[in-house]
Every structure is written in C-alpha cells, then in structure tokens.
Length: 119
Image 1 (cartoon, rainbow, N blue to C red):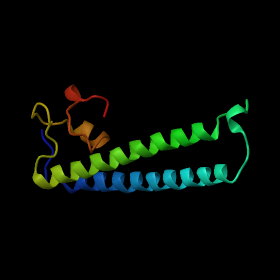
Image 2 (cartoon, rainbow, N blue to C red):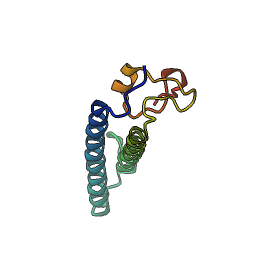
Image 3 (cartoon, rainbow, N blue to C red):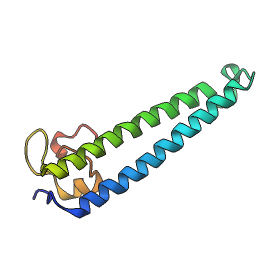
C-alpha cells in the first residue's frame, strides 16, 4: 500500500528528522571551526604525535560527517516536495509502493527496498 500523500504522520517524521539533521550539521560546522581555530593558534606538530588521531584527521572526519548531513537535508527536502506533489511513497525506479515500514525507518527514501542502494 502506498503512503497517503497527504499524511501528516510522514510530514511530521520528515520535519522532525530535518530539524535533527540541521542541528547536527550546525554542531559539526561549529566544532570544525573551533578545531581549525585551535590549530591555527597553535604550533603543535600533531602530524608526528604517536598519541591518537591528528587534528587534520579529525577535521577530515567532521567534514565527511557534515557532507553526509547536508546530503540528508537535501534528501529530506526532496521527500517533502514529493509529499506535496502526491508522489511520496512511490519508488522512483519501479513505480511500486514503498513499504510502510521502510518509510517509517527512512522517511526520506525515494526507493523501495528492492531498488535501495543503502539509503
């Protein structure tokens, strides 16, 4: 059964996930700026420190997490647009209904489980 395109339940799931993801993204960006500023104001040679990860490594990881969060925000906006257009809950590949359980777990997905590539 396809999702009811007017379903407020899915809109609430999407807007809740959007708020959570945007907050996470903002925190990652702020943390990245803080780490960068600390590195700029220091003469520590962390690249040769045998203890733990380097600042560059941490910045790289934060950058990757922020990119993932930005991508998720885009996916959520696309899902909200599909909801508004009445195409939400329909697989973008095969046109079949996306299972309700999948939509509850990943409300931003445009794909049924058979056409999913991990997202």
